[in-house]
Amino acid sequence: MKIALGSDHAGYDLKQMLKSVLDELKIEYDDLGTHDTISCDYSDYAIMVSEKVASGEYDRGILICGTGIGMCIASNKVKGVRAALVENIYSARLTREHNNTNVLCIGGRVVGPEIAKEIVKIWLGTEFIGGKHERRVGKITAYENKI
Ligand code: RB5
Image (cartoon, helix red, strand yellow):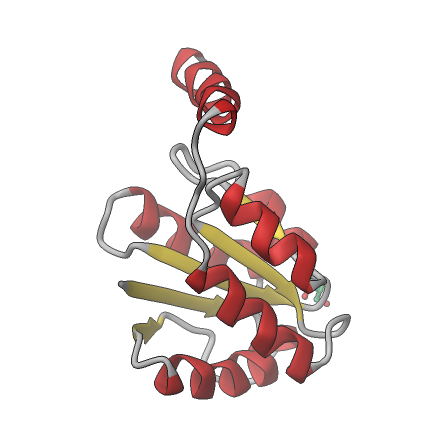
């Protein structure tokens, strides 16, 4: 599995911390920026990372901004992406099992680093369970393909 990481200035510190989890799990990743804490636009990184996930260049993406909300809004505009804003461990598991999300958004100013690390571990380690959820996600994809 290859992960694309992205953040704005407000998510930069948490992104740096989360790299240790990916290293620990021996998961390959590229940090597509931002590379410092100078103010920048979350939308640039959300769209860049999400397009690379949608194209198949990366299997999944992780996006961090201050709240995670802007990243999630922008990421979900990219066709083929299902992004979730996750703030707890339960949602980290369910958004993989039920929603088959391929982009994880976290708020660096909202979620503490240890919870964020657990969220990432669970999100990366949980499979989509399909069944009725396949049908539900399929309806989203069908709509997306129509517009
Ligand atoms: C930056 O100040 C902040 O607006 C951004 O990181 C994010 O929280 C937007 O949703």
